[in-house]
Image 1 (cartoon, rainbow, N blue to C red):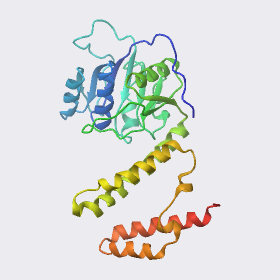
Image 2: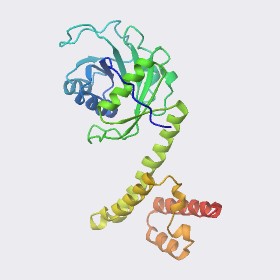
Image 3: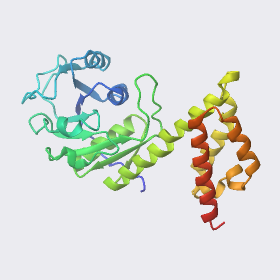
Image 4: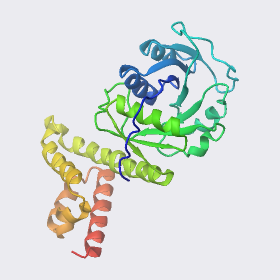
Amino acid sequence: MSEPLIKQGPVQETSLTLVGSGQAAWALGSALHESGVRVQRVVARPNGRGAALAQRLEASWVPWHADQPLPNHWPPSPDQTGPDQSRVTLLAVSDDALPEVASFFGTDQTDALVHCSGTRSLEDLAVHPARGVFWPILNLSKAVETTWKGAPILIQTEDASLHQTLHHWAHRIGATARDVTEVQRQKLHLAAVMTANFNNILLHWGHLLTQEWGTHRDLFSILSQQLNEFEQNPQDPLTRQSGPAWRGDQQTLESHLRLLQDDPEGTALYRWFSSLIQRLRDQSPT
C-alpha cells in the first residue's frame, strides 16, 4: 500500500458543505477551514452545536432533520460572489446514520459526496455518481487538538477530479494521503480499533494500579520504547515479546494475581492475556 503521487497541476478550489456537528465534524471542519479550504455551510440538527460550528468555520448554518427533504438548490451564503465552481459534501455523521443521510444528497445538492468512516462502504454513497472516502487514522475530538502533521488519511474514490481534491485536502492540512481499496481500509480500521481502543483499556488499568501515589508517568518510557520499535521495525512485534507469561515465570504470574485479588475484572484480563501469550509462545517457531 504505497503512498500515491499527488497529481500535479492546478486544483480547482472547492466549496465544502459539511454535514454533522459531532467530534469528527469539529476536528475535520476546523482543520480544513484553518488550512484555507472554504467551508461554505454546515448542515446539522438544530441542537445548537451546528450553529456554533458554523460560526467557528465562518460558514452558513442549515438546520436539518434527516426526515425532512433537502432543498434542490442551496441558498447563497452571505460572502458568495458567484456560483459554486465545485461543490463537495463531506458527511461527518455516525456510521449508523450514514446510509440514510447519504440518501438525501443527489446531484442537485452536490457535485461529489464523501464520507469519513473507516468501516462503511463506498456503496453507502451509491445514490451519487461521484463519491469518495476521506478517513484519517486518528481519534478525532472537539476537546483535544488533533495533530495532523504526517497523519495518514486513507482515500478511496473512482472519480479523478474528486481524487485530486481529496489529496489536495490532505496536503493542505499537513497529513499524508494514501489510496486504498475498500478491504484495505476496513482492515486498517479493525487494526486501529484493536491497537488503539483495546490498548486504551490496558492504559486504564495502568492508571488504576498507579493512581494511589498520583502518577502513571513512570510507564511512559516503556510505552514509548515499544511504539518506537513498532514504527521502525517491520518485523512482527511478537518477535520482541517479553514478560513473565512469555518466559513461563509462574512465580511472578502468581504474585501479580495476588495484587489483583480485589479486582475481578483486572484478574480476568491478566489471566486471559497471560494465557494467550503462552499459547503464542508455544506456537512460535523461535
